Length: 337
Length: 253
Ligand SMILES: Nc1ncnc2c1ncn2[C@@H]1O[C@H](COP(=O)(O)OP(=O)(O)OP(=O)(O)O)[C@@H](O)[C@H]1O
Ligand SMILES: [Mg+2]
Image 1 (cartoon, rainbow over the protein chains, first blue to last red):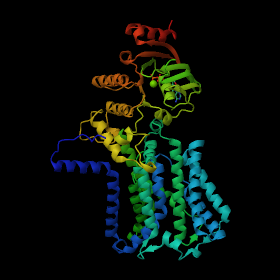
Image 2 (spheres, protein in one colour):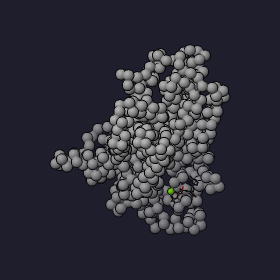
Image 3 (cartoon, chains in turn green, cyan):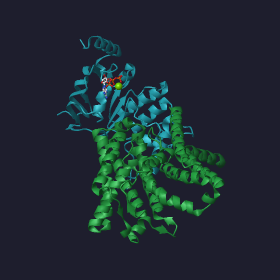
Image 4 (cartoon, each protein chain N blue to C red):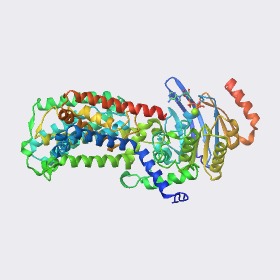
């Protein structure tokens, strides 16, 4: 292997400055979103110090954000490839239904867990097959599957909730949603693990390389031999897998399985993806952006309450944020092309 | 007996709905031959080469690589058989980095499909300073290609095709958008392909370019082969005359 061409060494400060600029340019979206989070928290801290000055609010974030954050990150992959999955809340619920029914009948938590994950994976894969091989746009296909699996949940459970109190104090539950140092919820740890996995897939694996290419220009990808169909199918399966895991975490945390599990997560999950800088036009998006955006989304409601605005304001702000972030992308894109 | 051809198409036809883009096309490319493909807009040149690269499946006909018939050719299979292509539409991903573009579809990977980004970047950097001739320090392997000029993008597509040591290099209007000096460089690349004992299919609307580098010229007209000439059989003027004749009457004589 040849070494890259040697350039005459310029003044080190100039070189450094150029590298810093280049780094900033390349990571402008991620730096931007972190800046937004910090500014918002400072703003909230100033307006509502009695809430945002306390440790417990951050504990609450770490407790609840992973429930949708863990799906929002694989969802980011999907959106980068210009696909969409509206069925993940229903997939959450159906996978946990499998967990609950299997656990009740066998008392084998490992078996129930594995079956739950497998269910999520398979339901995701089914989405992928519908989209890729039958050719239904993913937005439409997953509207269909979301009704179908939500319906199946209700059919299988008769709409009844299942208490999971039996699992209290078991090593399994501790591992999933226990507290570290009596403060940090395990689900936060799992969200970090999920972020690292998706980051590696997207940035250091051929799978992710192909996802970016498909989202950027599917025709080019196909001309250059990217196996577009296989990649897309797998992507949907990964989302399903993570949805199952997140659903299980949610149910274990509240010691109950409700058949409407996940229903509140669809829109905030998607909002986090778009706010995090993933472009609806495809080919652009980062895991870090989504990760940070999850916390931004989650802090708006408590902030609104703490500041003393009406709770209705929350949705107005969500709406505003989504419109602004998507507009920004449209404008940036127009300027680029 | 005779040496097998690098590539042989037999009786290949292809339709898109009502449009028959190719009808009963036979094409041969020798083991060390540059074939020039000429024809009007819509004659079916790009369709033909996309069949060779595995992007389109022919409706009927056979594809034979080095004497071996290949069924269900895919892009990956064709690349494994040593076919590299500069597509007319360039096949780049604008918002992605230079290294992602150069290694598109055949990333250098280690175990479990993880990218060897260090090697990919180093190779890209080397190609950039060498073949691509980018000297500006503003451009690096991690630059998005969206800001590149048309010619620079074309350069990326060309360098990518030449990098992988292909046996058969297909160039579909590679001079599109290139300045004079760059065009000359490209024609030299094609001569290098010949000199290195490899083969090429060269498509260009500029007859002078094609006549310059091709060993043999195939005229395509409305989806069918209208004529075939070895370059030493005729002069440029005769070729031009035949092309006019074909364009007007649809046949050689
Ligand atoms: N994917 C497709 N779907 C439908 N029709 C197509 C498709 N690809 C090519 N065609 C049609 O096939 C015919 C041949 O097109 P092709 O692109 O092969 O021509 P060409 O010789 O490369 O022309 P040009 O010199 O303009 O590039 C045209 O009539 C075109 O409209
Ligand atoms: Mg063409």
